[in-house]
Each structure stands twice: as C-alpha cells, then as structure tokens.
Amino acid sequence: FGMAGKVSTKANVYSYGILLLEVFTGRKPTDEKFDGNFTLRQWVAETFPVAISDVIESHLLNESNITPTERLAAMNDLMVMIMEIGLSCSRVPPSERMDMKE
Image (cartoon, rainbow, N blue to C red; front, side, top):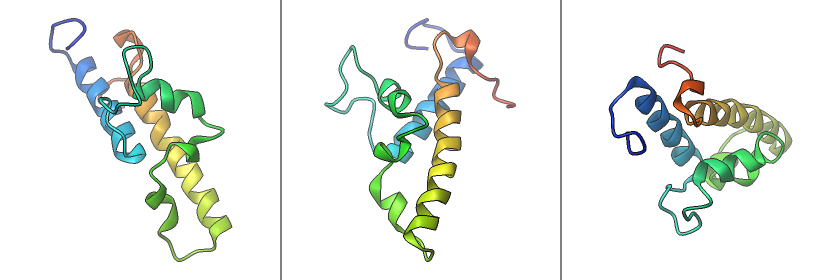
C-alpha cells in the first residue's frame, strides 16, 4: 500500500511477511540499524539460509529440553522455513509474492 497507494491482497501478504521477520528477529523495520538503503528484509535475506541463526532472536534458540546440538538443528530448520515464508511474502515486485491462500 505504501509504495503503490492502493490496497490489495499482495499488500496484505507483504505485511504478513514483514510481521514474520519482525517476530522472529526481534527487530522492527524502523530499527536504527535499517535506513533507506538497508532494510529488515535485506538483513534477513543476506543470511538466508546458511547463517539464519545470526538474525534470529537469541531467546528463541535457547529454550528447550533437548541437547544443544539437537535444539540448534531443529530450530535452524524451523527458522529457515519461517524466514523463507517471510521473504517470499515480502518480495518486490508484488507480482512475485505468493497468494494468501498459499
């Protein structure tokens, strides 16, 4: 909506994608780390999927009753899937975004 000035389902998909990135990184798009040339989406995309644990909120990776190695492997796989959805939903241009049904 902000870029095109019109409401669409693709704008909703974008918002959902950014929300996922916010929730799991603990960062807002307005964080001082991000300026007009560097965004939350770019930050996550640069680490995806090899170093995704570098951008995940640290407390999400530490709470579990399994061994640290098992936890890291399971959480990494889960976070890669979640961040893949977030990145897919926030693609530019909107025509490349998945549909809300997906």
